[in-house]
Length: 523
Length: 83
Image (cartoon, chains in turn green, cyan):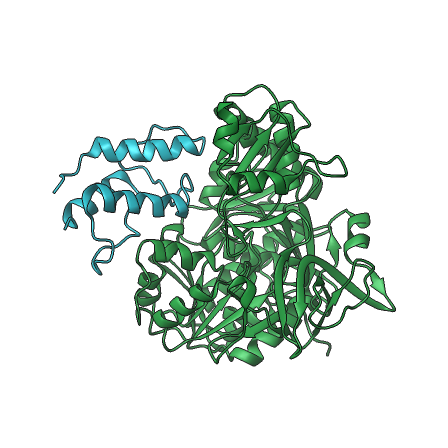
């Protein structure tokens, strides 16, 4: 019998093996594998009859409904699409139109967003939290009085089935959907389980929203192991040691900026997290100082840095750090290490030819974890996922080099993609909307200040008569999520241009670094 | 020691909401963070403000920083943890 690549298969198997173990803890609420499985089986019976192409939106996060919605979609043979709760209505409607979802699953926070306009644009079946714990009700549409029978086992899918579509910022002004196959997820999980031996005794923390693919790691490594997943509230994130202790968390994966945020409030004292045995960081450069502080706080834990874009399924290079791991000295960050077993990495020049060790170039990735491409964007997919001599690559846009020992190092970006508090942002996407909001083509956004290669803020520049910053902000808030709205806006007389006649973003960055911007404003 | 002035704390939070294009009005028992109105970066800034303005000792192990979801909780927390 061929393997079932359905991402909910391992969860289903553990529901049979350990029905009384906890699978999910959300605040005071706790679901055993048995309880969660019976909910998923029942909901899948409702969802399966409406699936055509299979895409199901999950307008939820950090909740029972988010987890149950993802498992149910998978179980019923669909493709789950996490949708951010902070997106403005205009953007949600555009997403619904693009995705033509078969169904939408919402939690209480998601349900509050459902205005009449949004419901009109939403799919015909919307499942929202019901009256009793773990229950769902149909909000609108064609849910029959006799929903389909509960589905005892997950639908069988092959490795090419699209497991999920994760949206990330796009340079054209609209986000792009990365389609990740069940086979790519399986290759990732195989590598992680071999290294970390996750087991039923583990207790993992869900540190991020489901719109980040780190959540895929947190959910699926945990449920594959028969372990417990503890959902963190946003407020828990500022005091992780408190959360780790009160839930005796053993495994952790988060973005490194959590460490910096925690240190600001003095919340990371030595030996404050003794229950942790595995700590992984991903999604941004990991400052060596942050790794050291975490290692002191979690003396029983290995600390590893994992690297990879959503387009290569969560992470695909790893640098073990605790056992005398390697740093990228020029940036005071932890190196990104070596490829996962099913992956290969190369540093290539602009023509796609491999360069010698020690030479900087673009990081290119190949192997079983590569995504299938961007949803409904074949040209962009062909450009970023070229096939060379029979091998399909993904060009990351990350600059890096490989050292003589075969260890990869990250040097930043070749383009204008930035990381801001863990969010991946293409600055051009904000530029597009800033130009509309200020009614001038001469407008750009600069990521500033920077710390260890990650942005800590955004400044919008425009060469036009000064607008009221509040008005610009309000215009942007109609089309962009809050984390993409600049902190300040500066009107300047003339926009610096580079040799190609394009706006020189670096020149504006240098002015900010030199503290010259206020002077210009006054003149 | 400065006693907790609920209106000052309310003002600080109203400024944070305004900076994020949110209605600056909120009820004393209204969820600020779990509801998604403010993010964890705002939470850090709020804690630092409490430390500066009211002498709250953030490193006190009994100080549960996750109990600042409503104005009521914040005032309660601050009044029991001033150094």
